[in-house]
Image (tube, rainbow, N blue to C red; front, side, top):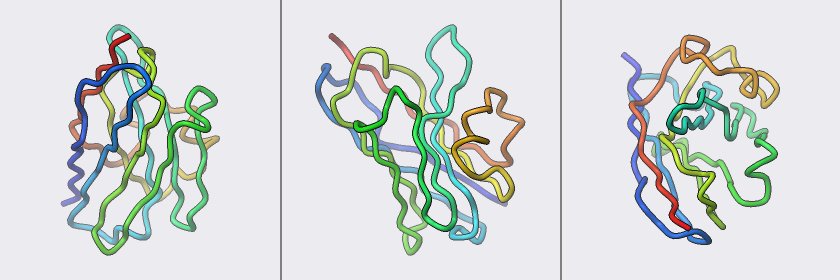
Length: 129
């Protein structure tokens, strides 16, 4: 049974920082491609960042230079460091894992949760202006 649990969300002012974590269990963690998604109220889910099993990363244009995706295989934890936060970054953030959906191009095309095998329940991020 694969489980992903996100944490680290919260409410901060614009310009602030947050670090999201996604702890995994029950699988060969280092072999999966991982990604962060977000969903704002009334909007579809969108990819934010992707991290392949070989370490290759990719980002949405809206977060490039501000967000960094990384992972610690020993801790089975995926991270998303978010700096210079903007009100437009508000939403529920989800981590996801899949053996086959790898690379930013594939992640960017996903708006339906059924497209990736495993998802966490999400952590809420609210940025005030």
